[in-house]
Length: 360
Length: 183
Image (cartoon, rainbow over all chains, first blue to last red; front, side, top):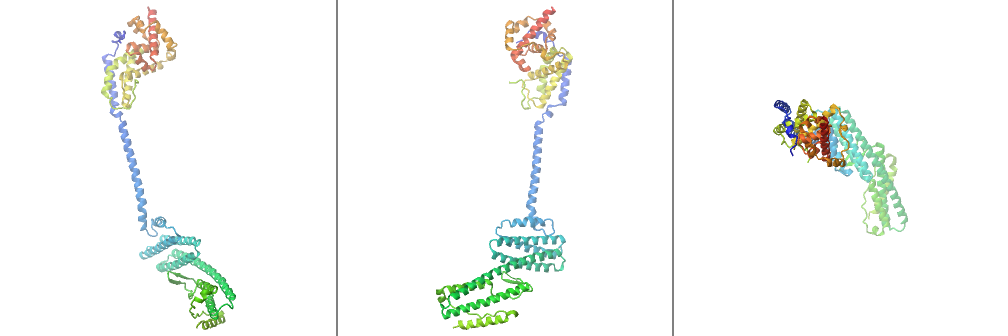
């Protein structure tokens, strides 16, 4: 609806000069503040996106570089030698990782033994190339000790479940370290390498001592058992007195005689070992002896125990006595010691008598 | 729909549309400012400031659906600021009593706007427009000089149509009284 005042107000307006001036000012403002420049929200959004992409790329590249470094370092470290920067990566990360899947102590011991051999090869390589530095020597000494400790630890773990196996493992380790010590000594014979030699002597000494202690302890246990079983056998023979045939009496006497001979032999061997502190160990069929070792006894306490048990079975079972073939008589000559010559002579005479009786 | 549409910029508003709005509304805005302020120079300045502010909004990406409403809104706010600067009259004091619907209905029952406006000499009324309270003058100028409907005025000054009609009515009555006094 048209206002009744419109007629009078239409003339109220800007004059052309005012309007042009106003328009010019406005255009000048618009020129300095153009629409295109001030719309740049989309452009800035794009820039932000680009920046994000750049940041993401940087992160991705850094991550990739770290990943590559993590993956490649162990491979590079594999060829590192003692004294190198990456040698610690090899011995502290790569090698333990290789053994992480091993579960039983026996497997772990084998693994550590292999690593020990590896250290020897590294020593040999460094000596051959003339690059056995003090740092390398320290690295080797430290790792040899560590492998030895690991093996000892696993042997102790075995000992909690199987004492006998632990004794053998200790003997193996002592033999291995004795051999390794000899090899290392030979390798570095022309070098000073004091810390390496000292470390080898230390680990060898610990292993040998541990093995000796275990062996002695084991032998004492078996001998105690032998003593008990032998008393039992004598009691059994006494209870059968008058019930056995003449032939059976002879057979029993012969068996007792042989056991006693073996026992004397074993006792004498133990005494000699104790007096000379020799260590005798059997490693993979080969016999390694220390310089002061004496002859190896042909019968172990286990063997004697078996014979006593067989005798007890023979005495307690009539049917067996009758069917059992007579044991072949072997003349045993026990080693003679200065302190027990007369006793030995008596034992030999007894054995001969038994032989005469047993032989048809 | 609101007078101001503050949507995200679509890019449809350009310089040509803005300059067309200048060409179309510069006289109306100037007239409104002049009858509100009774100062020609100041009215021109406020019109200039109004367009500058509108352009700033355009550049910020505000989508303007109606330049007329948008420009009037900016100008009206500028004029209110102008009154506040002068502080000659308290804005609250300008409100003449109750603006409730009951009062309004009673007043409108006595005289309609048409009857009142026809009883007033337009030429003389324009001379004395500055003598009535600011809020009545705002409503009367918007209604009879700018030709906006009560609904458009209500949206512009953010009140109800009834309040707008009451202010127009009271403004006309005040103007008539002044004219009668002057005679």
